[in-house]
Image (tube, rainbow, N blue to C red; front, top):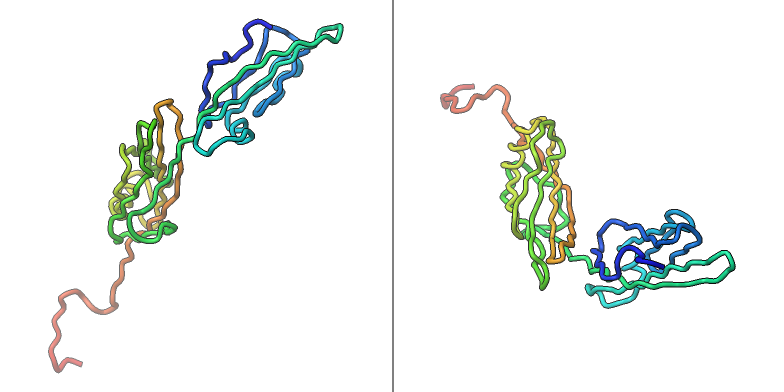
Length: 220
């Protein structure tokens, strides 16, 4: 074999895309190892980092080294095998919870107090954290909101009003997809999201009465 690809020094993020495995031989090549599959029979294989990581054994949260083999068989049945080791980097852990209240509560009313979503802390080797807020009911072309850092102040009424400016029907519930993302120093990322619903303010009136209306004490 000559220069099988990818190179042995290649590191992969857990959530990285699958890559093509290939040698200098145009046929009669088979690939094996955790995370491998056939792409073009006898010629190309595929390597999936997440599948390889989950199939291999190792401590939780640590890099796992994966051995991939390529075997060539010639017309006489003679074989030659070459192996390459790839490191698959562990997935960063991303999570967030509200600072108060039930962490499983996803429904809020227009007048509810502000909630602060707290993201999981950085650990060694991680570099950045951010929140993204997507307005699911918008009809405008406004981009998602991005908030850098590990906390997001979510005021139901403010976000509902902002949703209305983005095309949300003011008579309906507004939905927001809140995503929290961590990126480590290897540029590997992990994210988690939840969808929250904010109900509009309810207008209540009393029939036949006007605000600040004056009545006499003997009035029927």
